Length: 489
Image (cartoon, rainbow, N blue to C red):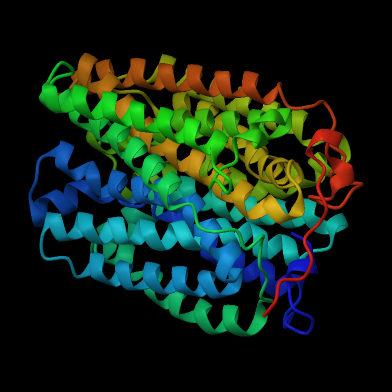
């Protein structure tokens, strides 16, 4: 996003402030994807509920996050990105407090869903606000740091959740967001510049079709192992969800101002990086969800011990992602992203082959390290590829679409991997858990490998290091469009 969408004089902070504010906001939203995984036993002990019910403490967040991301980006484009960013932080912070105070499982799931609404408004605007504040020649490093923080948040959720649950209480995994949110509100108001997008009308029909379709698919996948795949509710949910998604695609090809213009997928860069993102998160999220439980339920580690032993995986984004951002500026994003995805797939494949009921940590360590390096190489270059694959006025749409597909992948990953696990294993003993874990993680590795293949569809060289992100010159002639004029106050 260029500064052409901002009013003169509204830029109150510089690159450093924008990077800090957007990275912390992204950290909050990304952390809550998997922060509850290591807290599930404690939540079940306090609030009750079967394990498949507890899955909704994860899925309620990822689902609302996913289905409303593009709508959140569109709201920011129309009514002001900084203004809606503040709204998103407020909703997210209030819902976090409500989750911490939840008296029962139903109220916790409801609060998690509202958290997802706040994150859906806040998260896609972090990239557009950051892009507006950072000069084009420095965006690779900025995206690298932003990607490192977000990648660390996604993967360290089990560690943070486990540590807080073990040493204080599970409620503190949600209280943690409250002081961060309260600190961000005045900083964002004073230090970020306001900007707008195209000002196009909101696409309410498209939002309803996409939201209903995604909810139907995920709900069917979550309920399948419990109700049976041939059950009427499951089949109805899956078929209705698929029909609504087909309707969304058909509608978006004909609508005047669609939430997600289908023409964007004519770009190999946009189509390739989004397919890779969906598949990568599908394989990664489902694997983390099960491996975090494996370390506790099978190997007998405490929540904190399990999180610490995943640090070779979770800590790599902070170390490697900034370097990946610089590499993408020099050699292009495609080779970095593809390498990262194939490394992630190799790491997961190795873990699937070595997990046993009594596997030592030393045996698992190579897979954790390889997976961590691969994940770190993916985050920053993928973000840069998304933002450089569209013109400036559509960066909000592109950011929302990419983040939505990542969250859809995460929700699908947990549902799919849990279904594979339930078909081959159970929680009855250490061995039956491993019997379900191995095929599930193997499928996760195969899915991430497919993501690497999708990344190879991206053009071999994107000159995003030499051309301002989103500038028409960085795009094929068919995708070029004039940059927007300054939006009125």
